[in-house]
Image (cartoon, rainbow, N blue to C red; front, top):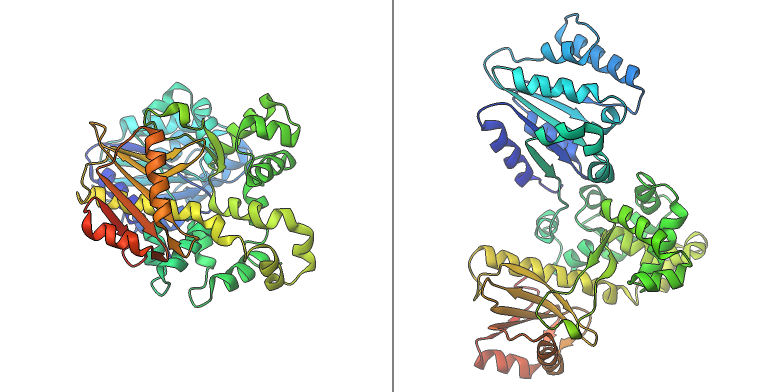
Length: 450
């Protein structure tokens, strides 16, 4: 559903370059990398092998069997000999894809050495793509498995989740508000978005896809975490605590009873798996009034599950989905989605920046997290000029008082802004409309503009 044109174009550019190359392509098991590979390999001389979770000997047996069957030739049962027989029928560059490569690398380092030999000596062009869907293994273990020769991988590509703009394109019949809700609940995970029905309401999608016992995402949160991480009880406890608002290490220690050292280890694992992130306030110079880094659940769906479903699991199995939705989700959903509306506003300004349509050329962008207030958007150029923004999602109107509070927070953050962006999902205080008509440094952005 969600196009991966950028990744495919990057692979094509690398393929067209002269010489041999080895590419590492990785992403979540839910990223649909297989479709990307199918599209890229179409019309090319190529061999695709999907590694099993098997012993060293069993792995080599299946690799050997598949090559022999495809090319109708006999060869010795070694990676050196197998790779020697993989070549195009003409002068075209040959593509070798080994998918789920971690299943080989964990048990057989000889395969990587054979791939390096292939890359070094092959004439006529070889393009090797090593793929895997274990983000945690890629970040923490791959270099150790491959040794110092790991540096001979030419390019590393991480498959990124879809952006909000991708979600808008994927659901053309949705209003922008519905796209924001979809993005906030599912994130940009291709597999999840495929389950969403654009002909149904957000409530009905949540009930049928997530809350219903037969829904495709009903068990997804624990399946996803358990796919790479052990001791699920510890991870669930930490994530549940973060979802309750315990975003600092000491708060987590007091809430869970785990030692700070233990929490730190598990948090690093969750971060390597792209489940959590440490959010640091944008550096404006106003550090005395800013909070230090806080932990948040980065994965949208995991955040939704632990905020709304996990605390009420007993009722999930006793209530009908729509009854559960009304009891535990409907009232607080807009409050939860505010954070993701801020992300959407960041993406909007980043696109304008790429097109040169901002008053400054922004070099960095983030959020200033104060002890008594927050500036949703702070953008800075290379000489410390700023733009700022406030994002109103859940309130009926963005008020003049919110604009005044932004001014106070800017003083605490010690910044001035060339332009102030006021984003509102619903409407604007008439005084703000009048202000924006008289002061070109104040810009109002509504859902139609987004």
